[in-house]
Image (cartoon, rainbow, N blue to C red):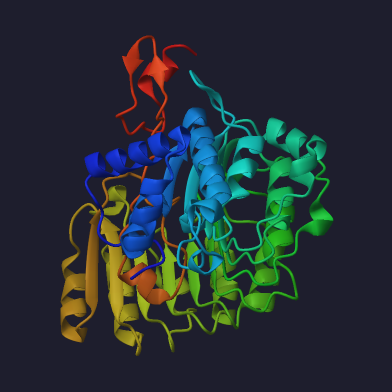
Length: 439
């Protein structure tokens, strides 16, 4: 069972009925019924809570996060008074203890208001076991101001968080460092952000990630060299095993990366390979001696492939742009020769407008796990829709045999009533259509 697998998913109607009944009983003060249910059916109760609240997709719904925070507060405050003895509370943890993964959007105005950093901090106060947090930040300046001004933001810590994902299409230079600095047990960091070179960051000295295992730079918005260096070019970090880069940083940065982490990196993913970056990687990729997974977002040629250390390579992935489909026979031969030369290869994945017969033949001869993904994009740089919510890196098998996306539950806005329309029975989407009418 994976980190995000919540077991059997109950029907949404049953989930909604359960949550509505709990809200009704808590607010009415009728705790006797809940006491008997909790004592007799504690395993069912824990499983139901884990199913309902393990992976939460809140999005920009401000009303949902406030109702959820209220529910967590009531559960934590009333648990001791409901149960007859304190010895039973260990088997019946509070509701917030079951929340492991939250994806939320900060700073987007809706009909219910706007979700702010304060709302998130109040919810995280009741989630001691949170493991993964995905933040989409619409207004980074506002979040940065809250970090500087709010007393609860200054004391805000996430000691159990192991995976942090940040997405922002505005300059997020003032938000990255204070967020990362508060995650002392961080293992996986994913960024899809733009960092302005001209803005001086105030928290740069606090950014130390000694236990970082994987770093991913996603999408077309990439941090600059200084931001990358503050996260991964730390000599005290000896645990880095996977790195994914979108736009290629400077040659100096890449050479430092190869010399510092080349002997430990097991997974290397290179996106948007420009000719200049291909030349640099051809020079330094032989320093990555522990590679088990290599993913190239272009159709590689012999110069680069001949420099790859293939002793421990288990999974190889490449992309064949649609525009190359009739004029790249030479590169097909280069790739097939490379596949023959990898002694430990177990899986191959490629993206192409049509199957490549020679690659399929080699995979069949060597009994490789073969995955073909259809790609009709002219430049070959097709973004993965699963990138932002993908399971964090574990081993090369994570890439060769993709696990399912985490099954998310959308919190229900139990008291929502917009212009006479009762939405209490709805699972609100990320962007509520009726809310957006009143922007």
